[in-house]
Structures are given as structure tokens and as C-alpha cells.
Length: 281
Image (cartoon, rainbow, N blue to C red; front, side, top):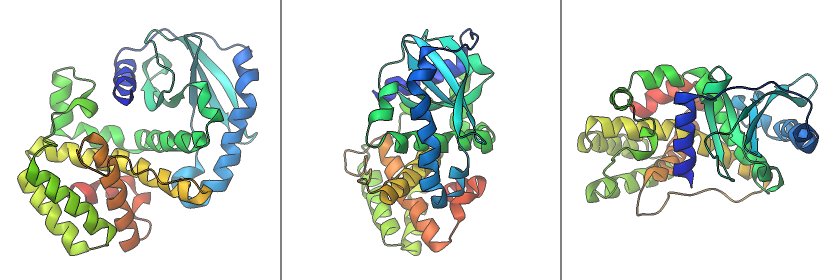
């Protein structure tokens, strides 16, 4: 499911769709109070990290339509600002953050409405807000310098973040990456450095770039998601922890690495560019 959702997101970024005019509608009445709760949830979690000082647009996909709501922080409400037809057949259950080609390439958290009734629904919204912050901060610049991204764009491969042929089954990689996660959990700085050096030598250059990119992008979102979960009494998300390894393993590994870096140097994750440099160096 996640692969389908993010491929759709890549297509939306690349192609766009015609944009309609906002108007007072049933969807505003249906979700107005649920969207107000975003600000109430923000008030609970804002001390966790500087990223949560901001909230971002939310696009609700329903009845074959994107309804884009922008925050009005001074009033603690969201207002409907645009609608567009869903020509991509967005499936129920989407949880994504993406620039919307039909909305001047502005980024939004894209969801379907049932998220507002789920126990961890607002946790996932703020997970996606982390990605909004990354995009508006430094993501395009950082990504533009990656050979793995440049080569993918030459091929018009907009789903490279999902489908890169990483050697997940390589026995040495699995052993070293599992050991790296243990070193992170133990705040073993020497072990982390040594294992990162081994991994960099082991992996092809673009595979190393891909791993670091996922650790930074998805690892930070997972790390902050888990800090929220701890703060509101929800179970930790450890998806990707156990073999067989796959792309989601880097979400878990990035979470653990960033957590260790934070414990060793408080506040390091507040500077997104510096955090990427530390992960990829």
C-alpha cells in the first residue's frame, strides 16, 4: 500500500492536475472541528521539537476530490482554499506529504478522512508535517546534489525513493547494519563510526547515498513520531527493525541513529542540513 501511495505522490509532483475554486462546502462542515484538533494536538507536543512550532496545509481526498485546507494559526482553524479533481485514484488510507503540482507545487499533508478517527491519526499527521518542514527547509537543495537523484531524473524515474535496487539481501550488509543499530542504541560512538565506515566501503556509491537519504528523510520523521508517541502514551513504531531488511529498515535505523546523535549532542536534529551532513559524512 505505501509503495502505491508514494508512487502516486511522485506522479502528482511531476504532472499536476487542474485546480478548482474553493467554495463553502459540506467537507468544511464535516472536518472543521477535526482540523481544529490539529492545533490542540500541537499544543501538547510543541515542546518535543522546534519543528512542531509550525503546522502545514492538509489535503483531504474524498469523493474523487482534493480539498486543500490551509492553517490560520491566529484563529486556530483551517480554511478551505482550493479543490481539484482526484485524477490519480488516490486510495483510502493515504498518509503522505508531497508538493502538489496543481497547487503551485506547494507541499501539503495528504490524507483520507478516516485518519481523524484513529487513535494515532494526529501522530501520523505530524509525522507528515516533518516532511513538509524538510521540503520547505532544505530537501530540494540536498536532493539535487545526490547522484542517485540526478540519475533517476534522467530516467524520469519519479519513484526512485521506493524502487531503488538496494542490496538488502547482502549478508555482510545485513550483519553490519544490524550491528550499527545496536551501537546506536548503546550510544557507542566509536562503534557507530566504525560500522558506518564499513558500510560506506561495502556499498556502491549510489546505494550509500540512498541509505543516508532515507535515514535522514524518513528516519527523522520516524524519530519525531516516536517521541510524540512516547509523550502521548502510544506504542513505539519499530517497523523495519527485523530482517528481512527493506526500505523501512532505514526508517528504523535513522530513528535510532538520530536518537543517539541527539543524546550525544543535544539539539542536533534542529539543524536539518547539519543533521544530513552528520548522517552522510
